[in-house]
Each structure stands twice: as structure tokens, then as C-alpha cells.
Image 1: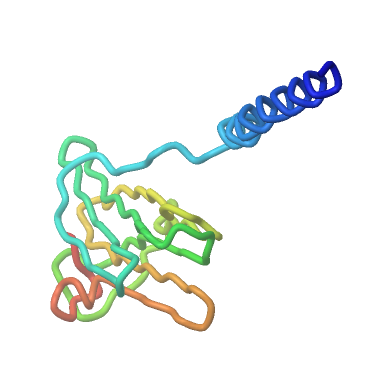
Image 2: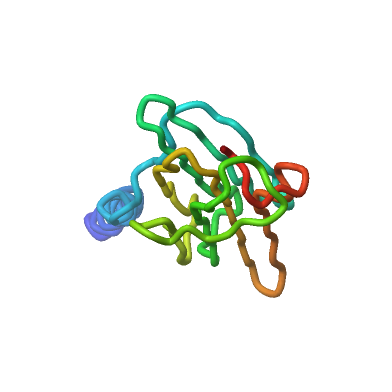
Length: 158
């Protein structure tokens, strides 16, 4: 009988450890560094869905006079993502964007992300900007830019 009690006690302790053991990976996952949730301030002025998983959003903040763009994904695994804003020399919407690269007229964020690329923010200086975004998962890729959001105007969001 004491052997049976020893075996049952050992099994009970082992079962208790099995029940407790999943907590260790959860604690490790909670301690892993994560990117804080990100968003742009201001008003959403345009967006474009890119396939099933991605959406680029463009914001304008009238108090700071800044444009902001962010590329969101719902795919859930790390993959290549890019979002950028470029200041143009044009001051009204145009089919072309002549880069105005003086004084930091270009900002981008790219890398392998699971939730978003960006936000990227740029002062327009009363000029139009071009927004560009792309994402790639395996051999599939998607892209969007001001021209596809604003009826062919690369220099947009003026």
C-alpha cells in the first residue's frame, strides 16, 4: 500500500508540474520586447487596402503641419514592409513629384515587421508629398502610392 501511495503522490506532483509548466513560456513571451502600438496624430485623409492583409493610411495634422503615414498588416508573421513620405517641390496636386530633398524631405521605415511599418512623419512646408508603401510575403508583393490613392497624382496631400 505504501508503494502505491508513493506512486500516486509522485504522479500527483508530476501532474501539478505539468499544469504549472505552461506558465514559464507565457512569462518568457510577456518579457520579450515588443513594439508599442503606433498611430499617427491628426485626421485620416486617405487610405488604401493592399491585398488582404495590408492597409496604408495617410494623416494630416493641421496644428503641427505634418503628414504621417503608417502601413498596417494583419498577416501575423514577420515579413518585409516599407512606408515612406517624400516632399515634392509641387504646391498643388500633380501627376509627377519632383523630389524636394533639402532639409530632410524624405523619411522612411522598412524592415521585417509583424504589425506595422512606420509611422513616418514629415513637415510638408506648404508643399505636396508623395506617400509610398509596399509589403512582401514570400514571392507575393503589394504596393500603393499617392498616385493610386489620389487619382494619378504623385504629388498629393497638399
